[in-house]
Image 1 (cartoon, rainbow, N blue to C red):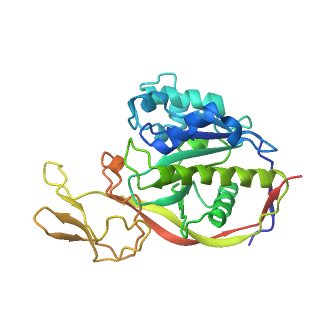
Image 2 (cartoon, rainbow, N blue to C red):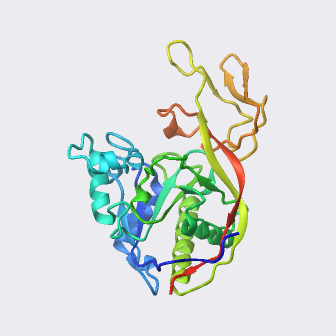
Length: 309
């Protein structure tokens, strides 16, 4: 394993809620923190809360014209013609907390999400090269009361990072569910609040020079998506099978049922490999033609980390 790694201290930190305007835990928490910011203060920094998509929050919808969490790419951020509200908003966020990829960008951004899928408390980061974020995940996992707080890597080889947290030099998306769109569940909101507190505590410890040792743990890497079965007109012709529903991060074996038609016919998973499905039956992914996402489980090895003195 690589020797001890050193990174600069983190002074400018942001916490975003409402990137999707109907994911209510982050919306409620950020609105609260905007009125009562002391909870985000630590000895070495104070995190800045903000609403990612204020118009979507106001209307309690995921987005107005396009998914804000897919717009933080160079072509959109550098465009002089913003054809949707979200593209304009992405440029505003980039100006306030970036510019993306620059030395002036915020040091870290935490982005708060809810899912209708049974994802529990999941941490989403670009890749295993995201050293600071992955160490933060490991720290939070040790503080959490949950037995399983999985880490999910979304970035494909050669792919540009596109979520809102990618504006900062490093970031973390916290995904919690199941929770319906437009609804707040007290226990999930409380867990998200506690998870953010652990994340900020990690930054405080890092800034004070704490040595975080090397470690190995499990993680999941996105490999593709599976659409619903469709009839010749493009309409969905089967629903997620009861034996798959709510089994996020559980191994899915070839030949096991994944869909069921209204006539009661089972449709089986056709593959040569085990996958670990996530975002199963996520309401927001119907428009993306994804009944679930496929991942592979891997062992994550990370070097020790400490602040650069």
